[in-house]
Image 1 (tube, rainbow, N blue to C red):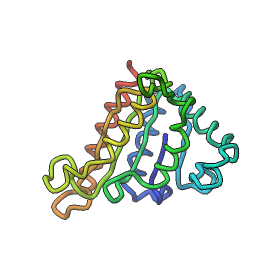
Image 2 (tube, one colour):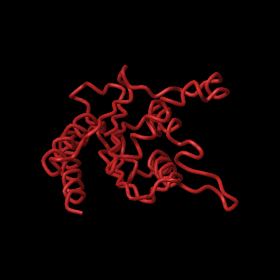
Image 3 (cartoon, rainbow, N blue to C red):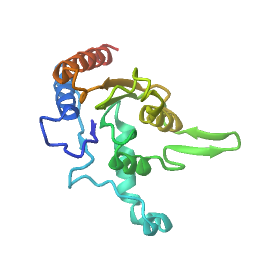
Image 4 (cartoon, rainbow, N blue to C red):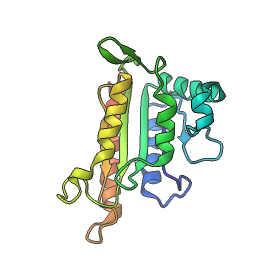
Length: 198
């Protein structure tokens, strides 16, 4: 489980509520599952930024990258919880992706173009919270960049399917924020049950 919220320890945040609910669902429906949690903004999380130094000398972060890649590859189910920020993913999630999208480790280049090195059997759900409605509001549909970006990255590594689960319109005054979160929880519950029964 990847929590990409900067305020990852605040139980009032919608993203965190959904992550905690999902964890309980996993424990209920898959009691034998070994759950690894990764809070990208936690001080103990090692997800290095790409700098001039390590770009020119990858050995400086090879061990950290290899650990993140190994963790990503061994997961049967990957749940990514992300609060939309300026139309796109938050910076620590981008740093994380830059550490796992590595040539000859999660993809390779061939004469016919790039090929993902993951087997595609992993199930991935991207859970996005947002203040506005990016799926239906004509002012924002063209700014719905983050899900497209995530699908592109996953496909590049060999994962062809991504479940998109939204909790959107959370900051609109005419909406009931808690009702939206509860609806999203039901969607998550159904998703986890389907994964468990597959």
